Image (cartoon, rainbow, N blue to C red; front, side):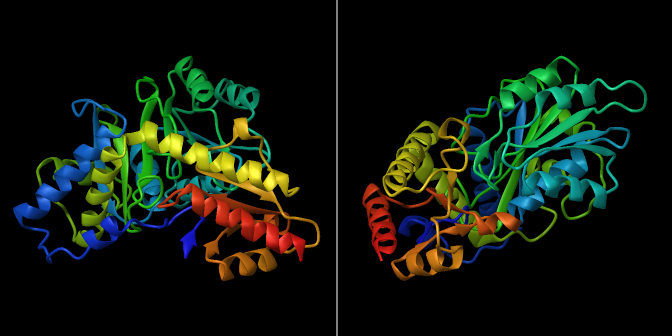
Length: 358
């Protein structure tokens, strides 16, 4: 079965078998060697200076990394403006509400890019506490839209606002400008563009941002995790086999050419899907130039429900993904992450063709 959902991904045999290594105590030097290698390789994905940046690992899903980032990096006296144009922007607001992090929301249409004028006006609003941080989802997989980090960073730079990014579905493939001085942190996960397994996530953060970190949570305390990992330590029992898989996936990633190669691969497959479905009369929801190469959304063909489409494709060995909320009635999503080939995409398109011809 080939997974065309936005994570977890179809693994290579190499990564899958890496989890069969010997059992390992997380208090032994061998585990700390593994943890160190993962952290070094995560920074290497974007050629980051370890004196400036650090990779903080945690045993949890990508949402936990986002939660850890928001709970720690918006100081007690800080305030975050959350940009929402999809489910995952909404989730960030829910996290801030749960931790009583002072926040405001810019809520836009799920079908449109963020409203830069509205964001600027909110950042500049007179009176009251102004936002110290801005949080945004880079790749909003609700629709496959790639939000413009560069434009948002320009707004932040002019106002001395720090940028926090949910990069869960973009890190490792899409461009993220870590040279941007406003960028404070990016939260991400092992089991999307890096092709690891579920259960490990991380925050790439400036060390300077950690100096002002709050401690609102226990298990996900980013500052504590960072400090102990720098000391070759860990506060809790990590998912050791999952870390084995992450390190092996990162080794494979580097050997295959790193981020540039992964981006090209995804772009090739994404376009192969788009062109092939267009030939069958199936349209994209978001224009290609505004979409991620990781995942794209398509309009359901007339007269075919998502359940019918999903089940027919699953019978042919492919798992696609529904739209979220009411969008499940109008669109479906296809991700091209994981261990896929051009031949796999051709088989997928042939399956679509057979279904539509019936």
